[in-house]
Image (cartoon, rainbow, N blue to C red; front, side, top):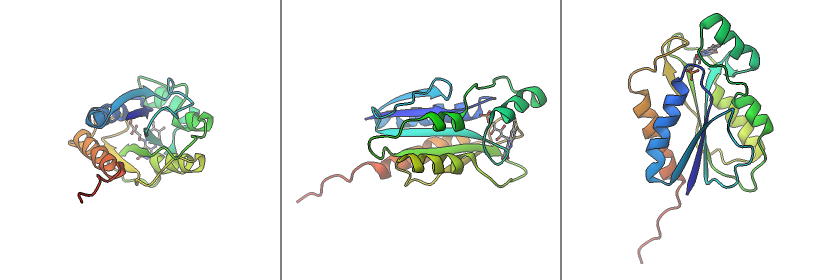
Length: 173
Ligand SMILES: Cc1cc2nc3c(=O)[nH]c(=O)nc-3n(C[C@H](O)[C@H](O)[C@H](O)COP(=O)(O)O)c2cc1C
């Protein structure tokens, strides 16, 4: 079994969760982790896709929100291609490869809108398997750090999700 974890991250919070999830999935199969700039456009070789994105302006980031993060908020990294643009370019899969989608959002104030919900909508339209509900993990302020326990919660969320995706073991006669 092969999993691909694709993340976008300006301060590194979403990346930390992507890496915690990839460690948790190692018992399930081989796992590759890439950022949205390096992510492939053809993913049919994988059995599972995990997508993580920071919520910007109530949805997935755009070039303008990423630039604003750097110029107005001191973000150390500006992805050239975010999850939104990667999804726009991503090939339709030949079968409904299951996908887990998560985002990061500020802890306070609690704002409406979720990059994960928006990404899942696009992934469903492309034909991916989106039966697992998207999940949100919380950061303090725009730059983080992650709220205590979020790495562990992300690892547990992904482990539970893949356990549900796996085919049930054959019944004992
Ligand atoms: C331009 C901009 C807009 C943002 N809009 C939202 C928002 O609508 N809702 C929210 O919860 N967080 C918002 N945030 C906070 C980001 O979600 C936060 O910076 C991100 O989760 C940090 O993850 P990263 O370190 O992986 O980039 C925004 C941040 C920036 C820079």
